[in-house]
Length: 224
Image 1 (cartoon, rainbow, N blue to C red):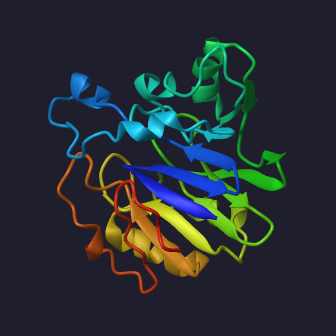
Image 2: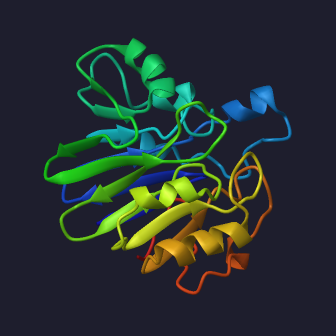
Image 3: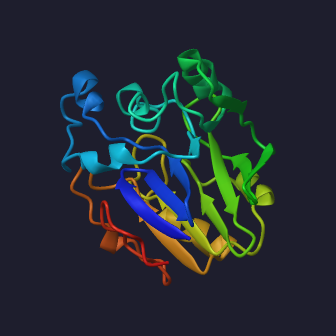
């Protein structure tokens, strides 16, 4: 599985010609409502040429479900499987067209092209946040979505996670680096990829101290 960091919490998973995009934020729309939260990273518009087979949104915050970005991928003319919790599903399905809008609640499973997607609990300020586990039959990848450390999450998580992708910025109801380290120690993945830094702040992902971390670089393949 090839995995590319799109910045903030955005990820692109690719297996053969099958493409999965999660929470892409490729605009500067947040600055319009909060001038302090301007992009520190230039948008790489080459990603707009990608045609995702599956798009996943973990919750309805602008840096995760961004209409300015979404309209570059999902239109009335596309045929995409869209997995989203109700807070997003109620909005994104208004685009219509031939897309398959799946209400992706906690404990829901969807299988596409042999890859299984499972929604799991997240603890965040959105009304229906989720994380997602992607099982390609070889490895399990866990994208936590925005979340705090919460004991109710762990029963949802299998004990053979290969790589976890998690926020460590410590604001906006996200784990800080200390709690994110404890979170990783509890689920015990082979690899932990810290995210949600460097877009609206100057935080250094290298300060995340989990032993098996891989620090991503924006728009580059993550070496997991």
